[in-house]
Structures are given as structure tokens and as C-alpha cells.
Amino acid sequence: MTDPSRVFRKLALNNAMANWRLHAALVGLKPGEFESPRIGFFPSLKTTLNHILIVDWFYVDALEGGTLGPKAWENEQPFDNPLALYGAQLDVDRRLIDLCTTIGAFELTRVIAIHRGSRVQYDRMDDVLSHLFQHQTHHRGQVHAMLAGTSVKPPQLDEFITGDDADNRLDAMKALGLSEDDVML
Image 1 (tube, one colour):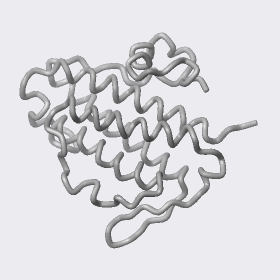
Image 2 (image 1 turned 180 degrees about the vertical axis):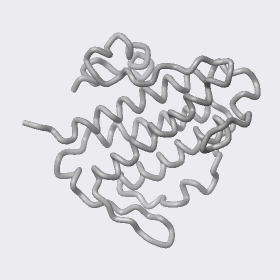
Image 3 (image 1 turned 30 degrees about the vertical axis):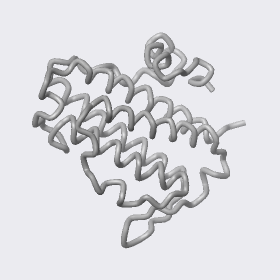
């Protein structure tokens, strides 16, 4: 029997592990590198990572049934400090894991309301989750490329999903309190 929720659970776990590894790399940045202008859709590591966070707040809230809407980006750069930024990212990553761990096939087809200020968008939960994971991956890739222009080597971010990745994800799993049972569900 196929479990349509499984892919979203795996993507939520992958997201948290990739974010952990990316943010762990930021610890090695020299003063000023986090804020320094860079080439990308957003002009710095700081602005790109804050963008990922606030969009996660926006969509995870909607997926949970909330009405946060555009209030999510009232402050487009809520965190100046990479450590504080990661604390907030970790919190929303855990919310997303919890959501994806508890949804079933029926919930994935449920239409959710996404409050966009002057209008409310209605879309299926599985489509919104797919969009959210694509958005995260897209911007993490930009951060990864920006890191190449710093004193920090960009970390490996794509080795968390398959069984063969087990040895490569040990550091992230340990840091996040995950077990192999969590990842290979």
C-alpha cells in the first residue's frame, strides 16, 4: 500500500537536516561575511536566510490553519544574528516535521486557506507543501552558492533521504535528536 504522506515526512526531515548543516557552516564565517553584499536573488546571506524563515512562517502557519498571512513579512529581516536566526528556523522546521508526521492521505487533499492580505488563496495541502519544499531548496541553493565567496566551504546538502545516505546524515541526525527510524519511516 502506498502512503502519500511519506514523501512529505521525508522532505520535512531533509529540510531540517539541510538547514542544520547550512546554519552550522555559518558559525565559521568571519565578521561581516553574513551581512556582506553578495550576488543572488537577495543581496546577502542574512537577507536570503531571513527570507527563507519568514516564508516558512507564512506557509507553515497556513498549513496549520492559521491566519498569519502577510504579517509574516512585516519585518523582512527579523534576525541580524545567525545563531538567533537558526533558533527561529529550527522552531519552524520542527513545526513542519510535526505537521508532516501527523497528516494522512485525506489531509493532503484538504484545501487550505492562505491569507494574502487583500485576498485568501485556496489550494490543496499537498500542493502547498510541494511549493514550500521547492522554495526552501531553491533559496538554500542560493545560500550555498553565496558561501562559496566566503571563508567557509559550502556544506553538502543533498545526502539525507535514501538509505545509502545513512553515514552522511549522522551529524545532522544527532544534532536534531533524530534516529534512523525517524528518517527511514
